[in-house]
Length: 144
Image 1 (tube, rainbow, N blue to C red):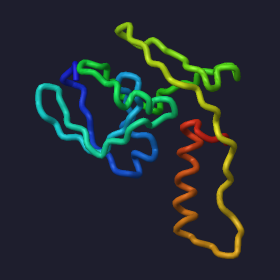
Image 2: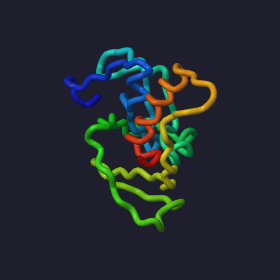
Image 3: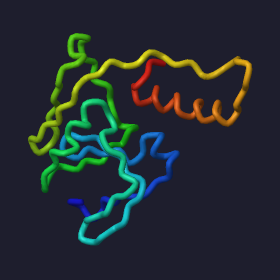
Image 4: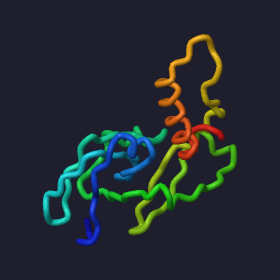
């Protein structure tokens, strides 16, 4: 980290599902669950989740030493409206220090209703699904 006041922290699976510890490395979006401080502003990240958004998985094998690492506060994200003609195309955004990030724009999936009805009711499964769906909606992966 470039500033001694900056610090990374570990989080549990529920926090990961809610979007915690989302970061960009180069042009890949990742998440991490476990953090071990190594000193001198360095950290070891574990429970590492790769290619967290469509289009960033192509960066899995292209990382280089010195790439930008930027922790993303999901509460501070702002949507960028793009024309429908951008679906399937690469878009780039310039970030501080003159570096750019490119992503492939994918269409948002249709809305998925919460489970109801049926002949067999599995409360544990329904509880899990009811926790997953809001996260998908919040991150713009499915319509509301």
